[in-house]
Image 1 (cartoon, rainbow, N blue to C red):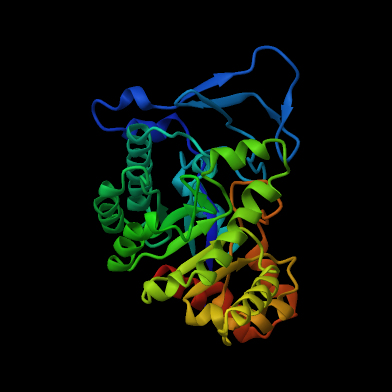
Image 2 (cartoon, rainbow, N blue to C red):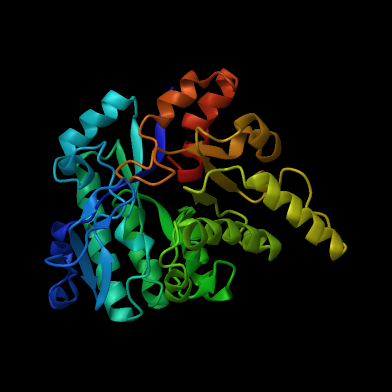
Length: 348
């Protein structure tokens, strides 16, 4: 069966911002280099020498770069090299997620709109070079909600198979009605909402600035799933699919148990198969206790990704191959995780 990498990344470069519209070039992030002071280290121990400056905000450019991939491949400067590496890894399709947008980058609506549009045009150009193998999730300009539907429609026409969100958006929870127009637009276009380990809350990001990433990124995303189910948001958009990406899957039993207790407190029942009934999919890691997780989540709701291009605790370039060789799951369950479930989530 085909093998789908449900979470791979692109690393943005100055080439990304060459897709800015005329008149918006002034919004382009710039790269600055450290010339003095002690070296800062990235997640794999490499020295961080370059930083993005986005709307006056300084962000490490190499904090989460995985050096088990070729630079030109992870930066999409050599797409044949990327495809060749996918072949070597036994991957038929990668679904591409951003890197820069994993953190808050601006509170300026005009800047956000310009950068999201440029990013989406860059990914559309990448998709055009390998439309059967490189799919992607679109970055919506959430500070300009009136522009979201049009941006998603254009992205959909050019290979996008999902909508990128973070665990917190615009200093709001994912269940906030502010985001409902986005959900309506995504449902109309049959594009899932893909909530990736990340945050777009400057307050929370800066509070946990020197955290390992667990509090500001991982817990925000797990909390987003809890908030959606607790507030019955998926029921408002019954055709919409939801993905929770790069947060492992072992939290699923805990969240479902906690929700069951809270539903009972208000005289309701969560019910069985809560993920399936609410069209929720979760990306696992090979280090998860998968038999235990599947017992709560069901075989049809788990996908897997490599985190290609990154170097954090979710990164496992051989994840898909290792799942095939693991032996803990039935062949049918493995096939569903590697192909059927990702195909269902992304509408491939």
